[in-house]
Amino acid sequence: MRRHPVALWAAAAAGYAFLYVPLIIVVVYSFNNSRLNAEWVGFTLDWYDKLFHNQEMLSAAGNSLLIALVASLVSTVLGTMAGVAMYRYKTRLLPILVLTPIAIPEILMGVSLLIFFVLLNFTLGLASVALAHIAFCIGFVAIVVRARLAGMDESLTEAARDCGATPWQAFRHVTLPLIMPGVIAGALMAFTLSIDDFVITFFTAGAGTVTLPLQIYSMIKIAVTPEVNAVSTLLMLLTLALIVIASRLTPSLLRSD
Amino acid sequence: MPGTSSHSAMTSRSSERFGKWLVSAPPLVYLLFFFAIPSLIMVLASFRTPGEFGGLSPLVEDGRLDLNLDSYVRFFTESVYAQIFVKSVWYALLTTLFCLLLAYPLAALIARSPKKYRDLLLLLVILPFWSNFLIRIYAWMIILGPNAAMARAVNGVLSWFGHEPVALLFSSFAVLVCLVYVHLPFMVLPLYANLEKHDQALLDAAQDLGANGWQRFRRITFPLSLPGVYAGAALVFIPALGIFAIPDILGGPEDSLIGNIIKQQFLETRDWPFGSVLSIVLTVAALVLAGLAAWVGRSQLGTRSSGALSRA
Image (cartoon, each protein chain N blue to C red):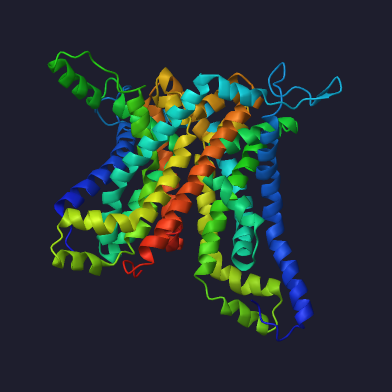
């Protein structure tokens, strides 16, 4: 072990503080017995109680969960296929189509899908949002699955084929169980990305459909209220739990950027 | 490649081709339909005329095809848009610079930590990125709010010097702080991936030759980390360039960036052709800069680490 200079320690500690203090403030004030998010008055759970009686918020949460479930299921299947294809076969077009949506600013995908759906006369709503979410989640799943395949011993699949397994049998009984942690991690990531997405949802949801992030957006555009802190705290707990599980399943998740 | 012992070479090859088609076609078709085609439609829309009630005017009217360069001409002649574009590039550059300054010590500390703590320290950098984007913006609304401790402290000091009180929220300061906050993890990850591979022997050798800490950083660590710096810069700069929610929520009227103008064109003014032109300018700028970062990174990698410096 090497010695760390004090200056490095101090600078890194400041970096971690910068990352965490804002989030901690949001959580702490969600328990604060005051309308203003300005100073600590006393402990209360009122804001959570209010939250669970807020019909708009509950229906937004329902929409978000439904979209995230559908989007993560479909994008996990398609993303796993893309990851396998990109790892096994030399394809030119697929990696470009899979990775570009991740690399470009999100707003571009949002507005181009808006034009697309409107020109097709496709009603904007839950379905258009889910279709859009699937498109950007595929890439994240594919990256995780491809990383998992790269860490796998390919000769196992070859051995199965030598023993007479069809390609499908070899995939179903050898490859898939081995890459399963990557597939599950990819699914959890896709679920988190979908339930958290604001930008692409903002353009593809239309006027009548509200998801949790859209609801938070319209609330904070009007005023800062501790109710937003409460819903933020719950949403953070959910997504952080999912990501911690996902990163446990595939430690390479941390390095595959 | 799968073995061929129980299959003839012919059937194996055709089943291989079938397998390739089977796994690549579904994601390919999906992304062609929901990514490639919408993008092409947007390119086409940029050459059209806006419709009377928003959207696009009919493609063929009175026997004339509606294709023109009007919206491009507008972008290049009305200087306000060029100014907003330059301002967006400037904000994205400042964001990249501040992210680099904050990320370097974090990445260096993680890379020098004992192996068993590295994953945890890295996870701690990534976790905030996985919390909701709007929540991270909202947090700064609280911190910079007019009644919060920070604004009172700053204005307390300012009034000491007889200065008028300032608003921290709804300012370019708020926009920049949040831009840095949101993008910081993107800079730490590639920097760490690079710093982790550095050979400690080089630093020891430099120390033996009498180089002090700053000289070791300046002459060895920093030049070797440049590929990581360029990768991080691309990962921060590109999304920062297209952001609209942060200026929308934390900025004042003068902080509108290109993302806000795009949003305005599509949802408020409903001028799709002009919105498409702005989106295409944004895409081209992002791609050029990403390409530049990749190219510079690769040539740096070629000249610096093919030498005796890196053994990783």
